[in-house]
Image 1 (cartoon, rainbow, N blue to C red):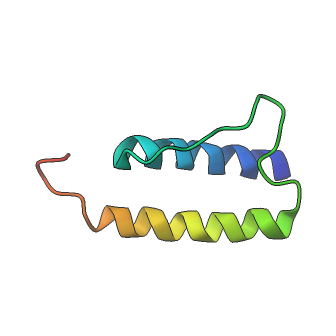
Image 2: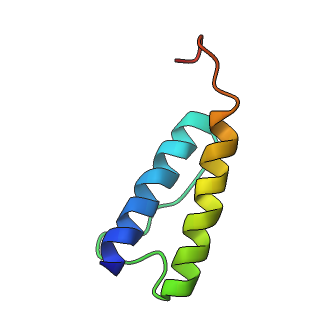
Length: 63
């Protein structure tokens, strides 16, 4: 489960990077971004907040 949550975070960060133009790095295959669940959960919350903030800037033209 932990690796799946890391993977989903990586996917969201990659998409957000493409949408915003902000750079991101993805760990090598088989390497988890966060080994500690508490850190992973904190990053998930922060990323969800960033996605929500970005979503408020989306215009019909962008879509």
